[in-house]
Image 1: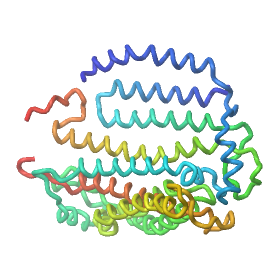
Image 2: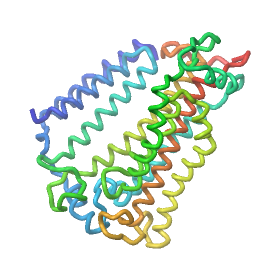
Image 3: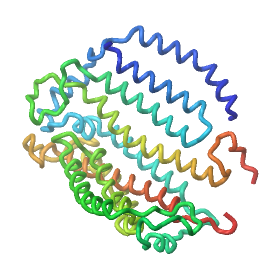
Image 4: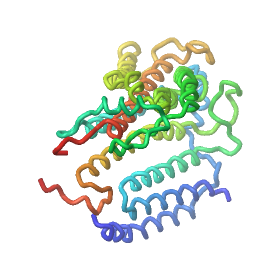
Length: 114
Length: 267
């Protein structure tokens, strides 16, 4: 089952996407978007793995050891932190929408009537 | 968009996604079968070139420093968006005195009787004692992670998040207004802007002192020592300050909405 990490990433993506499409609560939509982003992290880190490779820190192992790819780890670690703030931005939109329309159901978000 | 329209759109796009997934899985290499070249080159070269022992942070703040500049400003823009969206609207006001009255009552006897739906339940003495111990530990761990970015797993992004958890432990103890005094909004905004500006200034320093934007221009030092890897620790500190300020500002804004903001008569 050497493709298991990729299968899990695909499963997370599909489940999260279904949640975004079919949810009736905007907070749940935002959190399902977070699930979709998690699937991309798993995929990226899984791509960078070398079999029998070690973490790319050479402070205590010789520099010629077999190391995994650090590039994808950089992409994932910056993205985790930035995703949190982008999720916060989306949730701020939901908060203001709730104040305006009184509910978090996207079907209740009619066009502004002012 | 009505739920039916969304489902209809997904029914159109779903088979395409399914086809891509099937084709992708049929041609998948085995897990661990790594073919890329860039990662291997960086692994072999970074220790000699930049005297850094943490390849991930060396990529983040040196080889791909320009990319990190863009990502850092992405973070900055998101936080500006949150602050602008959750600003005080016409007809709302900050109810700090009401919150102070709620907090001054002893924990455990609060029942939300004052009509506000966001009365904080208060914290037991055990929780307060625990957060008293947690605050210095979190701040120390965060500073360690930020400064040792180029040596061991860590760096600005990771350490900044741990640093931001320090004042949140004060909130956990039930003292929201004490947390606001510890980390007032103007200080957080200044901290975040200082971190973002410091990173860009380091890049300009590379341009002025070494001829290339974002080039490592400080002496490289001995690998494994604290003052090594050139300007990487400074980059790390800049990003750490920015991430700390960003997370605390975002949490402050949301907590203000939940605990302080009260609608006026025309809200």
